Length: 460
Image (cartoon, rainbow, N blue to C red):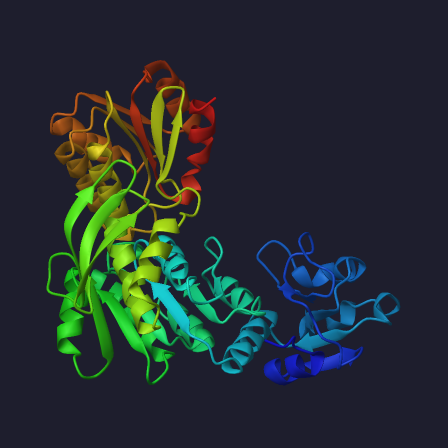
């Protein structure tokens, strides 16, 4: 795609050219002067603690081609420092960023895949992008930049790529509506409907409603790809046949793309699938049945974009996980499963089921608080405790006030070695005394629990 010039940007965001040249072209967009590149346009965003507008001089000094500044900051600009610079004034810089991203999207005719769901968004996005990469040059969401700022910044990285895979996250109603109306996806993927953010939304049915906002921006000829084994998505699909183009994937319920003869190995998972009347063997280089579902969505998306099945399967085999997501670390005679980026009941359940299958002397689960569960918090932590028991975990270590509910249920139901701590340091001290050669240790908690601190100190 051709680089945007200032005239395009002014048109897209209804901005005012305060000073400078409307014909210059920009290389990219940045909201952080620490990582800004020569020729980028700097977007000043006002946060809770810092006003990004105030960093305009630093952005110019580092080679910004232009700055987008909010109207409220206009009178604070030092004219002497910007006299040879290009400054655009807007009412709201976040909305301006979103409007420019929408303008960019509407001026490129390429496949855009949007991915949402309660669990597995990032890994699903990654595996879909890997499958599509065998035919397309794919731009994808990096890390977890899936919100009202991260998504538009991702779109604005578009240069020569001819496909996009965008992750869409949310905590409340209306958030995915904003994202999908910027991205205008040609394909929407919903991984599942679980309990993440149930404290904000009140019920799984409301979570489904919030996720389905993704359809508001989907192109008229677009397709929605769903996990047909998820109870709420299965029900929704059966009720909406004919209203939308729906493609399903699953293991248990009859679906358009189904995996069978599944073999769960320690380092990977393998299965067979029939695609367009021909049987194929698929190998996912990450363990766990949940990655069967993720890869099935990649096959569905690839076929919809006319990628040859053999090529999609090749891309799946080469896919790599984002850090902190089912990251297997073997060191000093122990195996650590680092899945500490985030946690919900559904994802902890899957992680414990995988821990049970790994060969090792003892299975140790280190579990922390699951957040944003509201009135459901105690119930869902207790349900995790039941999963600890079902999966025959040898040692349970919990960190945090909420995670004590996990420990209580596990103790009541026969898990002998259970320890609860308030702080990561206490858990580390205990673990370093307990860990033996050939142990397998799972680290799982919400990201704000900072379980990376535990990982760093038990692997030294």
